[in-house]
Amino acid sequence: MTTKKYERALVWFRRDLRNFDHAALHHALASSRRVYCAFIFDKDILDPLLAWGPQDRRIAFIHASLIELNAELGREGGGLIVRHARAAEAIPHMAAELEVDAVFCNHDYEPAAIARDREVALALERQGRRLFSFKDQVLREKDEVLSLSAKPFSVFTPYKNAWLKSFGAASGEPDSSLLPHYDCTPAAGQLALPAPAPAMPSLQQMGFDECDLQSINIRTGMSGGQALLDDFLTRIGRYRTAREFPAVKGPSYLSVHLRFGTVSVRALARHAMDAMRSGTGADGAAGWLSELVWRDFYFMILHHHPRVAEGEAFKPEYDRIGWEEGEHADEIFAAWCEGRTGYPLVDAAMMQLNRTGFMHNRLRMVTACFLIKDLGIDWRRGEAYFARMLNDFDLSANNGGWQWASSSGCDAQPYFRIFNPITQSEKFDPEGKFIKRYLPQLAKLDGKHIHAPWLAPAMTLEMAGLRLGSDYPRPVVAHDEARKRTLERYEVVKKTTIVQSG
Ligand SMILES: Cc1cc2nc3c(=O)[nH]c(=O)nc-3n(C[C@H](O)[C@H](O)[C@H](O)COP(=O)(O)OP(=O)(O)OC[C@H]3O[C@@H](n4cnc5c(N)ncnc54)[C@H](O)[C@@H]3O)c2cc1C
Image (cartoon, rainbow, N blue to C red; front, side, top):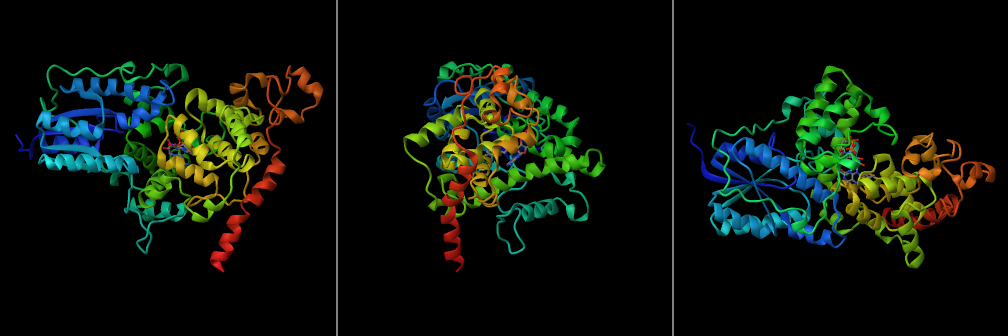
């Protein structure tokens, strides 16, 4: 029998709800004779969510995924200890109760989580125990990819090139054998669970309602992630062309699983890199891998510039912009949130978000640009709304996406590039299939008129059974005028840039 460094260890699961290819679980099993597993529904996170009401798809997703993880660990002789408490207190308390030598977890890069982990590490240290944390939820982190002058990148393409090079891409395609695989097979009797087995708190006990995730096509847990991945791998080769069209099954829809770690990001990257090497679906796989690199990029930006999590623009001069405020701004912001702007693609996208917690990437760009550059509303309000509604909400990617749209971000679109919501609609939902899915009142409009119903002849509207103003709103803003106002609003940035560079 191999000797282990520790007698007992505790694995603290957070956003890594799986029992395979899991860095912390692997290291705990490798170094400890007995391994306990725990998850804390952290009151510091849950209590503020309850202020929005008892419906939260994400808490339901986590809860269902924990049931599966508990069952999987149970099959191996262990199980999950789940509590509803302040994690910063509960983990040191549990570590003392179980008399473990060390707690193992995976890195979290958000400032609040870093502060919490520091608190836990200190409390454990006072008890004579250790907290070990590992890279797991990203492929490259922190300072692992730097420029030639050893500085963090702030532009994506050179970052991506250096990232690919770090996986051996300089001499061909990236090499998946450079990605570690963490074996998590326990020895007989190695996984432990206190007796009697602790009950998992129900959603109701924590103040939340049940959510029918199946009805919105969300499959939870490791099995749900695997099913999506299997499906996506059959069409990965078409990713680049299909991903832009919201009515088409183009992207992977894996974001919520990446958010909660019910899939391993290394396993996903391995599939993409292998497809790139084999040549089967290589182009689509390369495009998809690029999105996983964007994900790493925004985690890296958050690590090096945590001020972006405090609401600061990445480019400080953009904080001089004056946004619309007051009653009218509040009204049009509410219209945007509720899908009542009168621009069908924007409204259908917001309906998708409100009903399912998902929004297609192209539509995230369109709705964000619309809020900022057509309605003149501060991007932080949109960022906060997405944070509340998205199942896959991730501070780094969400902030990155919003700062991209507002042009204030590290590698953002220039401020004078303003999406036209009508041409975006014509280009990416030409027949209005996506629009009709979420706005059935527009179902009878043809592909020519569905993108801007207010421009349709009265007869067309009548034949489509549509009364503008009652069945569907008139546009809250005229795009061409809004565009001019936005260019004026952003003048302050231009002036600042000229003053700074002069
Ligand atoms: C305004 C705005 C807000 C966004 N907020 C979030 C967010 O809170 N959480 C989130 O995961 N993504 C966010 N994104 C990025 C992107 O829209 C989603 O990751 C994607 O739509 C998820 O769908 P998918 O899993 O089918 O993606 P796929 O196209 O299959 O991509 C695979 C994975 O790559 C990652 N990814 C893809 N695009 C991006 C991107 N632009 N930036 C960072 N990672 C990316 C995601 O983890 C995604 O699951 C945002 C984008 C914008 C423009």
